[in-house]
Length: 178
Image 1: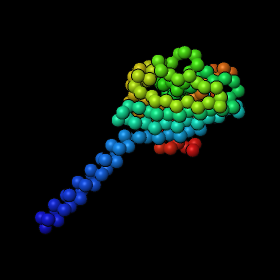
Image 2: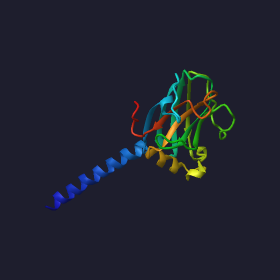
Image 3: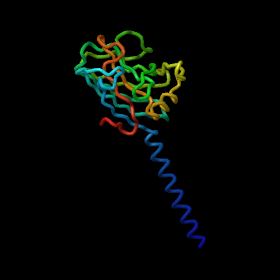
Image 4: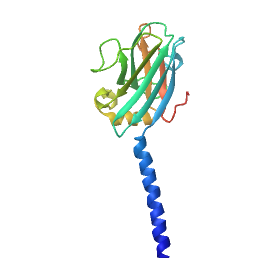
């Protein structure tokens, strides 16, 4: 009887260690893959532009690796961001993905001409707000919490559509627009 108890405890311990090892190895990596279109913009736009936003969150290292692509926009790209906003609502900028206006934090990449692809890493120092919506500069955990609540979107702005030409709501777990 005692040997069975010891064996059961050992098996349970191995199982717990295995689960912890998988969680540590993954770094808590949530993933998103979204399609960006004018139909998700506020107000809705009919545009030939389209794009994708892919992201992987590593909460342990406080990093979000992302790749943004875009093409066929009706004018040159000026900037792209992650915004705080639920579906069908606009919100403030949380983090820059790229900019050609010189208004992003140090190290923000330039937006390449289209068809464009920009990749980067968002760290706590890249979180810029939006303070009026409850996120202060540097609050990386607030960004991740908003992403997990499906309350963020990726947005690409162009010269013709300064408020944004294409947009995609960020949904973790692979996204609904795969």
